Length: 35
Image (cartoon, helix red, strand yellow):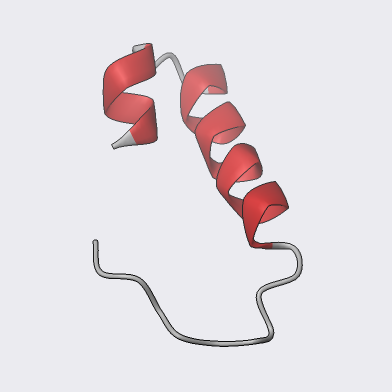
């Protein structure tokens, strides 16, 4: 994905980690969960 030029990116890592954790909790394998 292209990078977004923005200064207000605080919390984006937490959001990504939460999405990955949710996919893993639903039973998705690791690779599809992070894609």
